[in-house]
Amino acid sequence: MTETTLTCYVHPTRPTLLRCNNCERPICVSCAMRTPTGYRCKECVRGQQRVFDTATWSDYVIVFFTGAILSGIASLLVLAVTSFIWFLAIPLAPLAGVTIANLARRFVKGRRSRWLNLLFGASIILGALPTILVLGVGGGFLLFATAQSGGNFLSNIFALGPLLWQIVYLAMATPAAYSQFSGLFLRK
Image 1 (cartoon, rainbow, N blue to C red):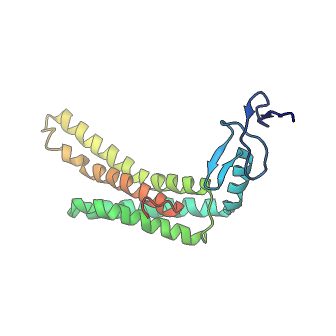
Image 2 (cartoon, rainbow, N blue to C red):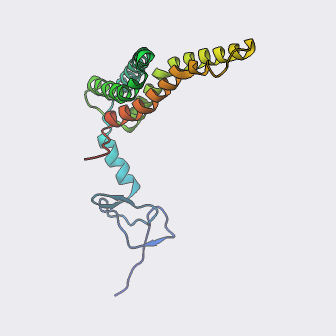
Image 3 (spheres, rainbow, N blue to C red):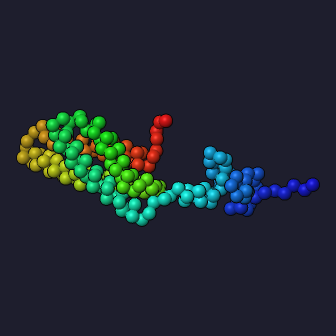
């Protein structure tokens, strides 16, 4: 009985004993992708992932504008609330992110795609960016004017407080919104 040596179908110079559990082709260690059901070749894994990408082109537009507009509104609300009670940004930011994600998920009727998730995360950031830029430029201008007029620089450093709370909002709302929208669960 002669023993034949299998070689990877992608890398014909690499001997292997491993096969894709879906298409049965021989694969080397670098081509094998571990799945819950065993090792598969990259083509089979990509084919399986395409089955779960159900988003249409209009979903990308809907998710982008929903995330950006609602994140912009939420950043303005955080600015208004933190003017009076500054520490409320900490619980409000994740709540705003989760609310925005639930609304966006409802608008696209639960369709999903990896790129749709990433676009949604970017839209949350882009929605809050105008408020951050205005506060950053305004606070920087105030600090510069104070330094030029010989005023107390440390007393006006608090002009950057609203900018700090916007950054806190963005740092807490974006991961909360992304994980809620993409269905990523950190705990069971």
